[in-house]
Length: 325
Image 1 (cartoon, rainbow, N blue to C red):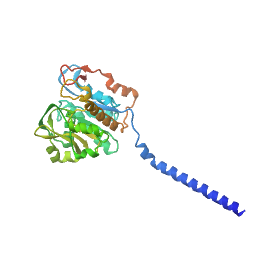
Image 2 (cartoon, rainbow, N blue to C red; image 1 turned 90 degrees about the vertical axis):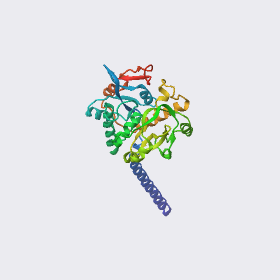
Image 3 (cartoon, rainbow, N blue to C red; image 1 turned 135 degrees about the horizontal axis):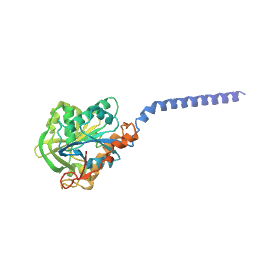
């Protein structure tokens, strides 16, 4: 009988211990739920692309977006909404809360006084506020878009004239590249090609010199310089990412390698085209971390770029196609 009592007692002890272990494991798993939910991704990202003024406006053609930016984002699994210029603040706020990121494209608009600049500032300010409260919202600037970002961050036009119109260059990577978010998943072979071959298309007359960047307190504290380039005399900043925000900029054009064909200086080599898609994939994946959405499926459908038709402009423009608004 003593043996049976001891066996029964041991069995009860084991069962009690197992129950306690199950309770502890359940409690720990519940504690981990917030962390697991933060890894959720938005597999239907929608990115806004900012329009800009047409140099010689016509009826129904007062602003435009180059189609290569749309194709660039779509190639990585995003849909695009055009951000029209000269809308109200409330319209922009509603749109901000509906999209998952924004791209400021290259072009020739004024970065100090234009419809492009006004809209860019509103979305930049909204993005800073959102990110500060934990609402992840990425911003990208290409060429003019990067120049616009430097103006918005510093409050000053810090551009210097450079001899960088219509030339492709290899990137001079800085030590900051090693732990950058942007280049973290790039294959080593592609990074080698970017550093040694003229793969990045430059089409700008103005740049931010490295000296200016390093001596301007706002820019230096806000942006990590990932690459620079030389125009022969001036070392200028060519790739940046913000330290504390998902804000990125390139003075060069990652979208051109795969989608623009009117200029001979643009490289279409396999490595150049891979660069297009790796950069696009990076930014679209950043947008996947945002969960803004349109209030209705109808509103989303009406906002998408699919409601507009691109026009072939390659015979008279640096862009093969444009959307006009």
